[in-house]
Length: 115
Image (cartoon, rainbow, N blue to C red; front, top):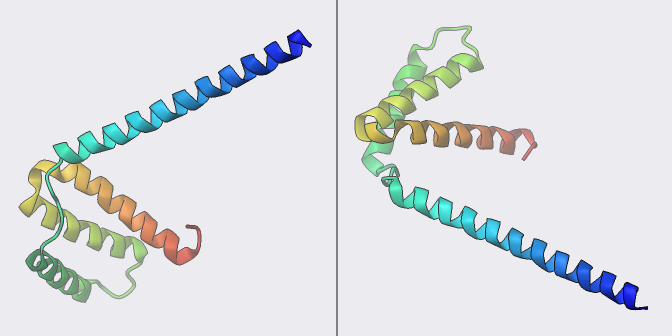
């Protein structure tokens, strides 16, 4: 009986240890994300920027030749977004590029049902 009790005590200690590790990893992940947010400028779009982006998209769409494909459309959106980011947030281009690509992928996944 003593061996069985020792086993359960060791099992409980191991589970508590693992739970502590998981909690610590969660804490470190939250802290890392917090630090990234603090170190990055606010790159949200203003109403004026949104109007400029919309005008650029409309202008570029009107110039797309017949026979264009979705690759051309993606290229157009990427160029417009990069132009807007470069004008106002040139120090944060890599971060903005990552956010743009994640957002585009997320939107596509929502629409094709894979999200």
